[in-house]
Length: 254
Ligand code: F6R
Image (tube, rainbow, N blue to C red; front, side, top):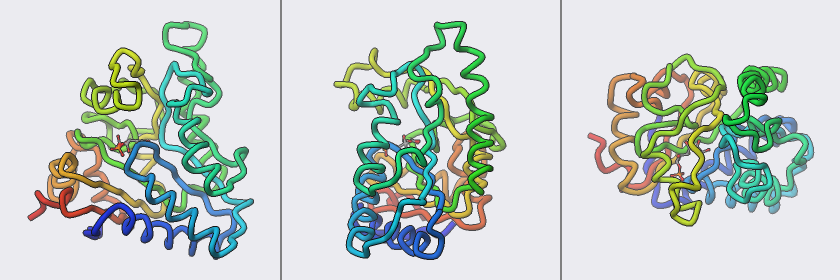
C-alpha cells in the first residue's frame, strides 16, 4: 500500500475528492464504495465541493455501503442507511435508488425474530451479487477500527470472507456508543458487513485514519503480518491501496 501522511482530514479529503471526481469524469456510472463513521466525513464534504464547483453530472453514479446494523429500523437516525443518506446521498446529489446499503431489505428485523433469520442469511450473498452486477466497486473508502477492523470485519474474520452477518465486539460497541447518546445498551450487537474478500475486489482502496487512537491499528495494518488478527492488514494483498493518515495516526510507523 502507499502511505501518505497528510496535515489533516481536509487534506485527505481533497486527495480522495480529486480521485473520485476524476473517476466520474471518465466513467459517469462509477461505482463508489462508501463507509460511515467519522473518518470519511471530511472526504465526503470535499468531494461534494469539487463536484459542485465542476458541475459534474452524478446522476449515473452508483454506491454500495460497507455495512449496516442489524435490528435498527432504516429510519433510525443512526442506521447506516440514514447516515449514508445524510452524509453522502444528499450532499453529493446522488440518486438514492442507485445507492445500496447491506440489509436494506431487513428494515430493522432483528435476530430475535426467527422469521427473519433466513432473510438475514440471504442478504449477504444478494449484496455481493448486486455489487458484481454493477460491475464491481471502483473506489472503496475505508475507515479502520481501533481493533483493526475494516467494515465490521472484527479480528478473527476470514480474509476471504464475503458479505455476511457478524457480531460486533465489545470494543467496537463502546467506540460507537458516542452515536447513541453514550448508551452502550442502545448500540446494536450484530451487523451485516461486506467481507474482507468482498472489499479486496474493489479496484482501488482508500483507507483513512486520523488521531492517536488509530496509531496501533495503522502500524499493524502497514507493518504487521497479514493476519486475521488485524483484518485491515489484508490491504497488503491489494495491488492499489492508498492509506491516508495524519501525523498522530502515523506515529507508531517505523
Ligand atoms: C463504517 C465502518 C467502520 C468504521 C470504523 C472507524 O462503515 O465500516 O469500519 O470505518 O469503525 O470508525 P470511525 O471513522 O468513526 O473512527
